[in-house]
Length: 230
Image (cartoon, rainbow, N blue to C red; front, side):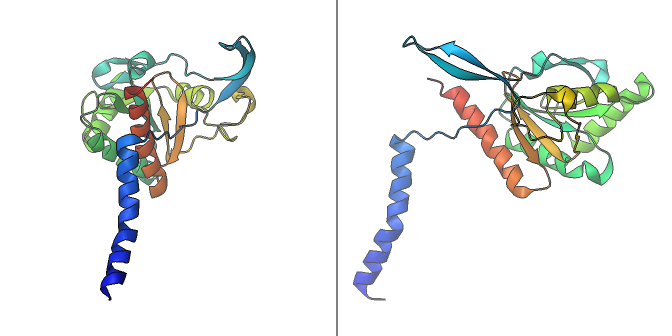
């Protein structure tokens, strides 16, 4: 290759690097996460004295779950940060989601605002439920306080999935969110992301590697937005 061509090729390769460094050092990038489950649109007065339409999104209502050792876990405790939700399914059906949560646990181990919760139907007795939670916690290698294995009656979990997390047959951006008129659609391989305002911010297929990468990216985006609020 001639010297002139070598120099030209080097300059062409250098341009995107310089552009990245400029944006990283001086730019301000915004990646807007969607908010799901819109309930209604309200009219609000602006600072200029006019009116504008503002969408009100569903907030997950308070709930209580049982964790290892009989401790009660509340939605208020989870809402201190962001959390990823898995509805447990035994065997291979739930394995991909569990592997993704293990990866997230390791990736965000030092970050206390990121937690995971696996929701399990209660067993026939309290003792059997506690034994199941302990077994799953040991099997998954959960870190105490980071990845929570929690139980509730099956009917409670179905209601929570449909009425609070928007696990219905309709797309979650469907307006308005009316869970009572939408058939439930609980998919064992699906993960959900909730922010500290108890809004659903994402749905992800744990069997799709691109969806998993999107989840990790959007966790980082939420953390960045919390650290850099105007």
